[in-house]
Length: 241
Image (cartoon, rainbow, N blue to C red; front, side):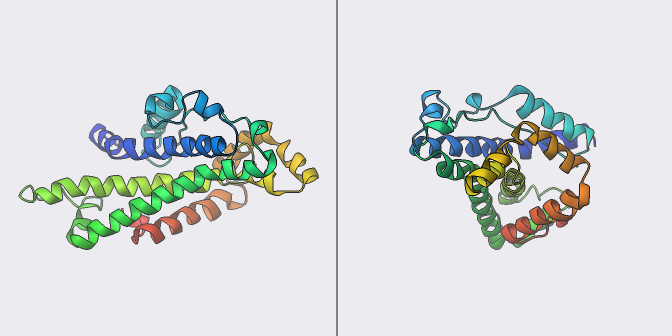
């Protein structure tokens, strides 16, 4: 991967990724505030200002390093989590489901909105899709609309991709991921307590599932699910790009 390609990839991915992670976190805090916990609001975290959410290592350094090291094959990052005190919630166990599910739900909504915009632009000018393929060439400089719309299409596609990835990844039912917290809220009390007890080891379990891929969890389940959802949203196979 040459430097120009890295710069291009960062330029079309940076804004979609930032919006995906920021709105994800704000959604947690906003729903928590509505359900009785004002912690995020009082700490000034219910804002779209990226400076309130960016983690220098997780949001900037790790994604750039992985983008270069894996030649764009795998990118991971995170923002500063929005603080939520579940004991402040009016019904802690039940409200936890809504607070945890708000992040992935927001990502899915973003993906669908961006996918609709992607489809609308291509419906107006179908020939633009030729410029989205690797080696498809740059837009005709005599066509100002193409020069403007091709980068927008690429950013919309990236927005769909990263929002779907965040939604699916975070709904893996292992605490402290959002899906794990949803599971804790749904299970009966005894099973819920047992499931919550694995939270200190949760990230190690998730890392093992991603990198060791036991039973094809990532390659045979998660990745195909992400690809199918993306294809349903944008109407084009991700392998086209």
